[in-house]
Length: 138
Image (cartoon, rainbow, N blue to C red; front, side, top):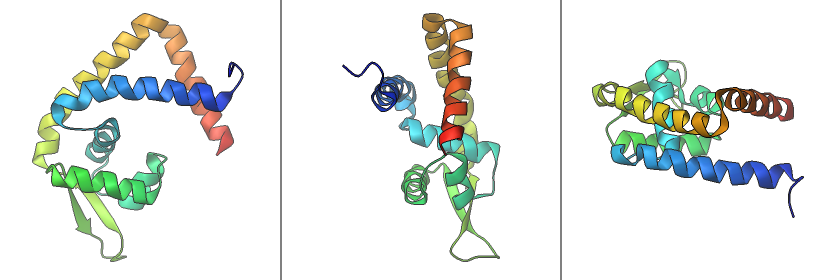
């Protein structure tokens, strides 16, 4: 029925992937959105909240809600910036650093399972194609 519909097929794929990563991150009490945001914060400490939203291709209100959850879990801190009192720099806590290796291992296992199903070449080609498609439509 929707074989040629980009929206339907990419949304269905996103739901399938969401379930896979949700299972992987559940032991940490994190959603996939929180886990990927935490990874970005750990890799780029001090990133401004607006830049974090841009890097993750999400809206600023969505970034705020996700950061609220990470802050409540004790994984991030917001530091005021001197240049703009409305903007916060996001920093990982020691707890974030302590859990990141395990989160990375869980995520890598999901990737390995998907690569086994698709084959490494198809997996890599699909990721590249989707990334280029997204960039072209922005």
